[in-house]
Length: 231
Image 1 (cartoon, rainbow, N blue to C red):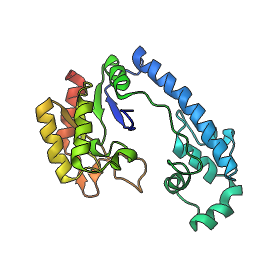
Image 2 (image 1 turned 90 degrees about the vertical axis):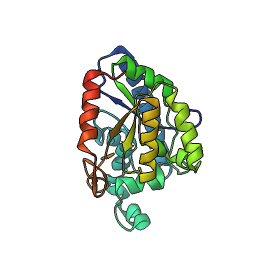
Image 3 (image 1 turned 120 degrees about the horizontal axis):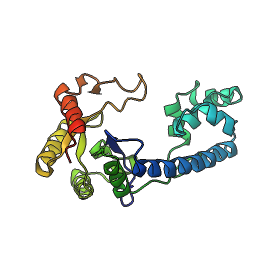
Image 4 (image 1 turned 90 degrees about the horizontal axis):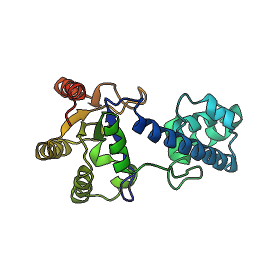
């Protein structure tokens, strides 16, 4: 979290056994469980059939909103209502948009570390701290609008010692990419890429746009930076 904004930070090449990372992840795991239980109860209050065992059955190592959504979608008791509201059984993405985002009945704000805490933990684990999808840091940041505001926030973030920017991403425009390259030169940052791949319906693994692959030179350079430690 940075000021009043939620953002995503990548930790590349981390040592997951490092004490700094284990402390951070343990705190986040506890917070996620508390949040998930509260969202489950809100969905129950909204009339959906869902239990904590359903949520656990839909989860693996981490409990997040997609798991809660799938717990609802898998209960046959919810099928008639879902078809009435959505016209069919929705995807978990569509259910989340309708019921588990800010302003909807099931949403609960999550507890997050600050941007500085995340960077310190990543560096403590010998990793590289990367600002993910920099001009689409989070839904609430998109709402501030305008390049000057977004660029100002990004410049403030970079003071925390970030190592790079996720320049190649589905949310990146050609203008964004020019800005990111200029920032990288000025602040000696690496540029990374990702497809933000969650499932085949929404992204193509290895692509940052439908017909644009993440350049091999970017992937190779990122791998070398991780191996050599650019900091």
